[in-house]
Image (tube, rainbow, N blue to C red; front, side, top):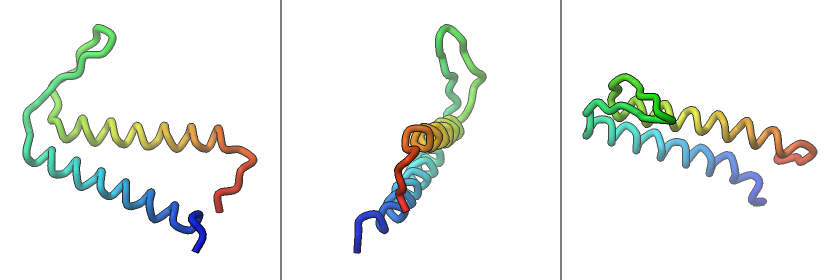
Length: 76
């Protein structure tokens, strides 16, 4: 079996592990935190929500960058 057939399975497994990790951390630590970035501070949000939002945003940005820089390549 070529490795290209395993790539979707590996990506799904990594995403599933991240979802489970976020769920465990958010259940164990519901303390509100605020983010400070470039001098701007956010409202108090639970740790799980911050982790979920940053992971989702990172996955979306990563997928967009991958699609932008992989033109001409066929991963199927």
